Image (cartoon, rainbow, N blue to C red; front, side, top):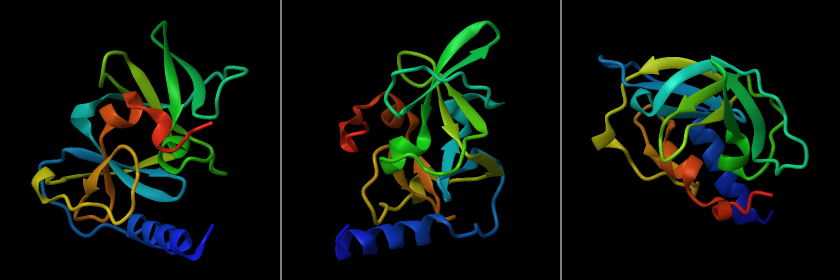
Length: 161
């Protein structure tokens, strides 16, 4: 990693690890942790938040965490750490975000959920780092995820193995 990439990763980690300031009602998002970084997901993009009970699939790429059974239906689960950073983090995902975004149901494995908060979609700023699936930076210094683009868009952005 060269000096420019190292500085970019330092700014990214510093920006996404800040603790949020106050919040305004009504609640429209949930904050999640992925590889030590804070992200925000719109509640409207989720159908459920579940405890992870993922069955790994052999011979799959690292982005595929496996399958989770939800009321008799097997849902494919993708790893948020690989999608967002391009690598598997040392942390294990404990929470699954089930989404109906896009043509098929799937889920995103995150480390944990934290706060319910208000994110003004009109007050987003561009993130100071490139990352697939990030719609912008919220006032709480967390990146707002675009689950449609993150889960169903091309994975070539990070060349996820």
